[in-house]
Image (cartoon, rainbow, N blue to C red; front, top):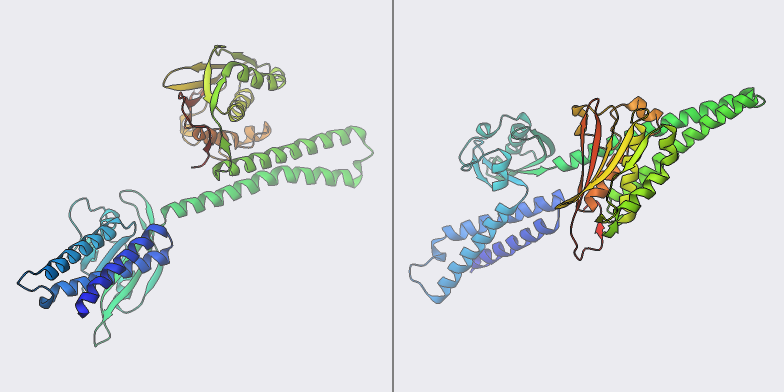
Length: 423
């Protein structure tokens, strides 16, 4: 009777473990689930080893018990195999006695299992070995940061606990759980870089504003010519801060999924004409010619406001970084994707910069970009808005021959009326 209850308790534990693993990403919940599964395994293993629970003659009751054991074993195996966390159990001799498929992937074991192999055969990482060694001495280790570089660099949070104690107060083994925190580490690094970049970008214009305000306060208020020049510099830097804050808030809203796009069929030619007209004065100041080569009959599926925002950012860059007396051409290629092309005759972008060009605050020429008033966020905004439409933005460039930016939009007419950015 006790063994029967133990069997059903094992099944219940497995179900609880599966639910915990499905609904929680918390390390504590995952660890709890691992121990529940492990307890269930021990109960079922003990039940299977008990000769009294498997009589030689088959009755309806014994058949039901056999079926329950089979189903519970399948459930536990599926639960362990489906865990995202790597699970490794070693005995007192540091020999692996149990593991799951996540652990096999962690140690890059394409074939077979690490069971019955010593831990030193799997890894030479001293942090992993020391954590398991301490657990065998009865010391629980948590928060151990482990970096694995093969086949790819990944970071894990390792927790190892002792398993069982005999009369000599020595542990029978150790159980280790590997939590993959690579994405969290990457997001934390991005957050720190973002804060650092924003602080740096705001500090530069703010320093200039304070410096010229102090200059005015120290006795140059009566000098009309200097006053106007100083006020113009203060205004320029204040506008730069204003643009930076606006772009930062816009990008944050897009990445958080708080900006929606509502794609519909629109005429591309008049929209591009509106963008060109809004930047005509800036282009004229640099003697830049803008050539709208788009067919007036061209229709694309996009959110008009967001497409205008993307084209404005690309066209502004094409004007800023063009040559004197240069040219910017806009055209559209129809096909499986609608490709809206913005081509300039600037200096071009070296190949090593192209891959990172759409990152936040990334600049090819930092000094020139700041001089021209760029925030370093325009291309990042274009990238996220293009992806919100189900498309992409690409760049091709050759030094000395200019750059070509391409917005690719799906050419589909469906029921999609809105989409969230940042999904």
